[in-house]
Amino acid sequence: MARGTQRLIFVALKVLAVALALVLMVVIIRTATFPSYQTSPPECKPTDPDFIPADQDRLARFTSAIRFRTVSYERGVGTPQELSRFIQFIRESFPTIHGSPLVRRQVVGNYSLLYRVAGSDASLQPYMLASHLDVVPATEEANWEAPPFSGQLKDGYIYGRGTIDIKHTLMGCLEAVEFLLSRGRQPKRTLYLAFGHDEETGGHFGAKVIADVLTQQGEKMAFILDEGTPVGDGLLPGVSKQVALISVAEKGGLQLRLEVDEEGGHASIPRSESAIGILSKAISKLEDSPHPNMFGTGPETRMLEYVATEMTLPYRMLTSNLWLFSPLVAWVYSRKPQTNALARTTTALTRFNAGVKDNVISPRATAVIDHRIHPTSSVEEVMEFDLKVVNDPRVKFSVINSRQPSPTSPYGKDSPTYMLLQETIQQIFPDALVAPTTMVGNTDTLYYWNLSSAIYRFNPCVMTSSDLPRFHGVNERISVKSYERAMNFYYHLIVNMDEPLILKRYRHEDDL
Ligand SMILES: CCCCCCCC/C=C\CCCCCCCC(=O)N[C@@H](CCC(N)=O)C(=O)O
Ligand SMILES: [Zn+2]
Ligand SMILES: [Zn+2]
Image 1 (cartoon, rainbow, N blue to C red):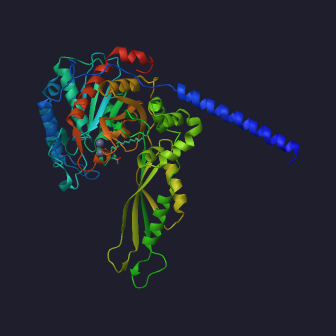
Image 2: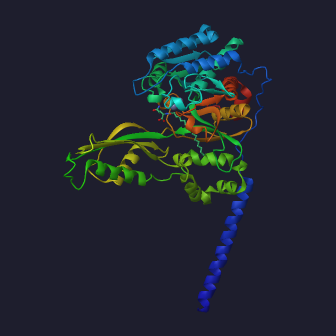
Image 3: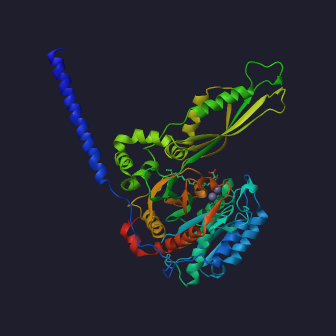
């Protein structure tokens, strides 16, 4: 090798070594100095005078609520009589709320409930706590440890459909307001409680109408809190502490019907391709072509950064240096369904129908695809992607439902309402870290976008990965301790909302 070339290689290696050393130095410095986003407000203890205990009366009210079979089946198909009975039960169970001159109650869309608790300072913008009255049906009833509409208490857990989705927040909010008013307290800031009756089938007749009513009344909310992500226990790799996940954005959705119509006929004289075959190829192409991994563009990235300082070393190093390791973390995310769902638009094949008889070639095949759209993508982008992937004019696409991803609500120290939520969560879940994330399922908040720019989704309940299948699944349950925390979470949120100390720390005068 010529001397000149040797020298060039030597210099190049030297430059590379220096560059690597520099990169390593930056990685180490960032790992060591990465900021903490956590706070440590005073813990709420059972000995506090304003602690709401899960006593017999409150547990009885909650278990009774579970016994109402307020099931939503399909859009517009629910259980109206049961909803009416449940609404009556709520009216009788919370006499202080329903007798208070501060409270205005409206039944909206026949079965949804909207409460307005008047604050003493009308100059303050109101806020809204949302939940829903309906539940999904309970299948496989025989496999439940306790019947799904029994509200049975077993080994410290209350079993039943709705215990974590979402009657614990519905009853928790009501218990909190009942407790507040029965102590003769009036909140400073006006508060709304909004309970839709058909969230599980899209909220078209509940939350949508609630939003219309509030819009007609000209209301704007300082913030809205609805059902959402839980306090995860062991859900985040590399973090041993619990992490309370506040969803600051929600994925969009696109439900598509795919249809192929071909000539059918006698099974003894098949053509080279059938409706079933053509559709199968199309949907298998879609399943094999995941939408792009968007890690690094949405709240899923910040979720990691918020807990970075509490991670074990390798994770901490990766997370503190996403400028370098983002592609690696994106790949790690794609490996597990839960994190994959956070990082990209997902594709779920949910229905496939064709054929009527064993020896008849079906002239028609249909399928349904359920996409959940990443906050930085759109319905249009997803549609375009799918058409390109299938690339077969014989496959007809039609849209069943679509919703764009939500706007992202403000979070972090610049957002007083996010910080208020974070601090309230840490009062009730003192062992938990708090982080922003994206809601992968959909909620009634879709209808509330115009009411507030600060919309959060949170489920005040600790859940491990083995609890997640209980959502809409078998053996849905909540521990008594968790229900107690839910009540206290809402009570403290209401109290903190009026507490100048917490808000003052983060207040941007224009925000609230
Ligand atoms: C590091 C990984 C952390 C990820 C943690 C994910 C935790 C997921 C926790 C809860 C998700 C399950 C609860 C979702 C409930 C969403 C409400 C719902 O079921 N909506 C339906 C109906 C929607 C509608 N209104 O149209 C849906 O999304 O299909
Ligand atoms: Zn729900
Ligand atoms: Zn649900």
